[in-house]
Amino acid sequence: MANREISVNIPGNLDPVYSNRIQIAYKEDEFTFLFLHEIPGMNQARGKAIVSVSPRHAKNLVEVLAKSVADYEQKFGKITAPEATAQQESNVTIRGYS
Image (cartoon, rainbow, N blue to C red; front, top):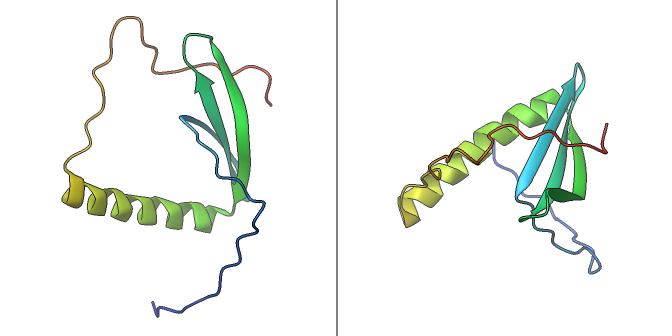
């Protein structure tokens, strides 16, 4: 694959968002990512962004993210998942979005 440069224009009014939870839905022609900010201790999450991509772009995202995580771990050390406790749930039901 040949590398190419593109010019990226980021509008000045585009605010960065923080997300600590993600919900992913898919159908035949797209993947939809709902980025959320879970509010600790409140059993609430606020939607921050919804991004839909084609299956091909989703697959590319997986590859780019894997490479970026590997590069990060090489620079800063291995990322470890926190130990699960009896109170933590690995699966969370998100209400209010369909």
